[in-house]
Length: 122
Image 1: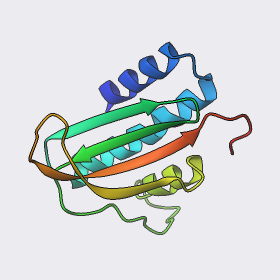
Image 2 (image 1 turned 90 degrees about the vertical axis):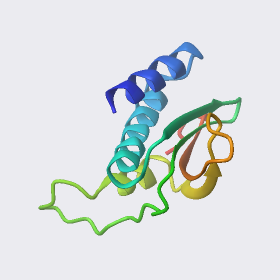
Image 3 (image 1 turned 30 degrees about the vertical axis):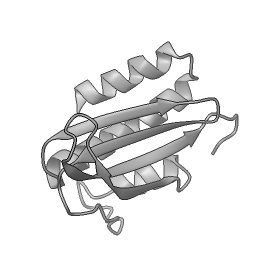
């Protein structure tokens, strides 16, 4: 997970995005990568796209099970990842069937989020 966080942080800072936006993206990527590793299947891909309007990140894995938000149990040590994703992305996230860029013909799913590049986005 640390490699994914570092990669996203460096890439987004290199294109000149604001630190708050970068840190939100890093946290969300960390949650999605963790879910892919814990509940999905290898291989894994991380896709980051930045344009003038938004930042979109996808974590692709070969597992069939789609991530599902759980209720917020304040005593649990886990289970809040998708709630964090939903909050930070203002609901701009989801999971779709998706192929792999590096493994043509391999089917998987992409869990994604988008963060607008505008001021006051939350």
